[in-house]
Length: 471
Image (cartoon, rainbow, N blue to C red; front, top):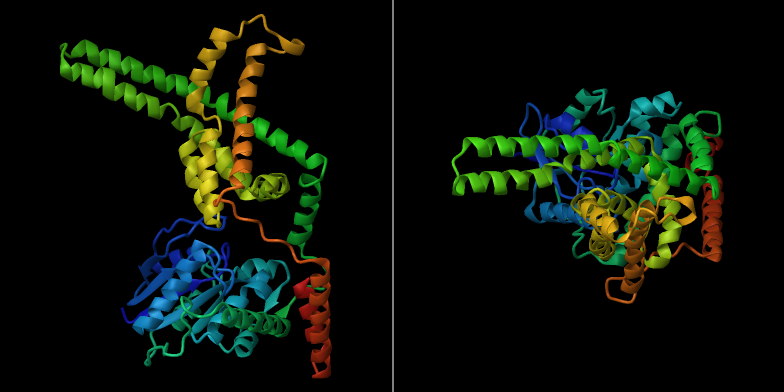
């Protein structure tokens, strides 16, 4: 390979979609941070350029394993003298945040280009990005594209083509050895550079709030209301579990009956012996024990996908985050715990997206305590043996109440164990928000910078764009 192009940027900026468009591969995409936790590589269509899709990265200060993988790869390329180009993917409607990474990487000595993605959505919202001005301000090549629709991809291909001279990485920072203080300096300078570049190259619509943002705010006021929000969450979970159990039961019964009938038919055709016993008493019942739970898992993930696409799952996680923090957990455990009610295996797998390693281990330890579908036959047998049908507390079916209490018992035990784990080495304190005095100081510094900018002759239009974009 004559050149390596590393796709870097925040999660959910369309990196993986762009990777697929450049290479023709079908890398998995999803709308959550941590989807790409390992780098994926492919070859640029019609060329000898290797394209590497790096995990999502927020800043030059790596915190999660995803970010460490990205910066470790860049540092190794610098060590080996690879002809590297870091293509930072930025969302056109969120450039104020997304341009911090390319500005910081350029200051760290890496050759950088910027792909402003989702330019079509930004145009619909009235956001105009001047790619030429942005390129001049950042000092790096910039291409405005839509990876999903193919807009601007020819210009991007020309930008990625190998150059006559290889990239010089001799002065590039090694993120494995660079001091934290130096990274903080680079990050602070990058934030200021991104702010100034956005102020000069991004034009926002005259209305104060974008339509999509305004709609999102209206939805948040309803689904995250202090009183109505928990009611909506309880109703959503009720309908999810109704679909999970009521909808899957006929399919599970059909599969179980079909495999049992197949086993009996096969037994009638085979002579008695070890082969018949192996197939009819071992293999087929074993397969049946696994296959019958596939409908529940499929329905669960279909419902979770629907709630995720509507944007409700992140809101639900944010809503229960405050309630879980006293137990050392946060809203990110919502999906793993919810998945564990169908099966603990997908629940444990879902925990891989939790950034904190210690909190991820705690979630994996607690996920099996959720009542999964495999325990329902055991619970049903115990309830039928020890709870008489005549038991009707407050007029409700006593056996159903006991079943619900068993589900609640698993949740309570998981929370109590999470509370106990707070006193072990697995506990990781949540970062504290800045104090009011610190926020006041930050605002004072921002005001001071704005005053200095005006004294230096900053135009009123640029100041207006910067203020609106930051808001």
